[in-house]
Length: 136
Image 1: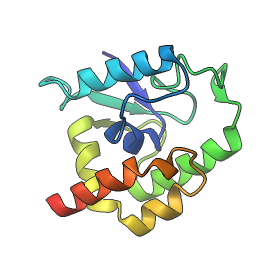
Image 2 (image 1 turned 135 degrees about the vertical axis):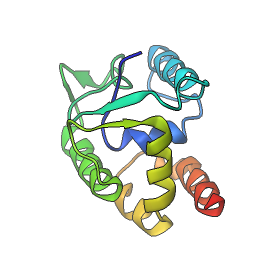
Image 3 (image 1 turned 180 degrees about the horizontal axis):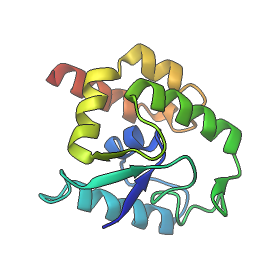
């Protein structure tokens, strides 16, 4: 499976709960996560991109290779790329991505980087971060 993620989608993927923008979006994201969470998914290489990615493919907000909220998304990507020390063109395994999140993301960094995210209010990402911080 060829998977690409925008930088902020690494944390989104870790905290995905089966919610989304449309049934097609949810089905697509669920399929990606089933693969990544399978025995072969741990070592799957994920291509880091600066445009719409595998998760975005069926999103109703997608316009070609950009989002209708591109400015907000670009800011989220920049903040997450800095925290995770990744950039467009990198390839990283799902296992290594999860380790980087555990090693580099703090609650303070999360609250700052994800401030504009509409999904932040649900608390799912914060819950996942607390689990990963405590696991280290």
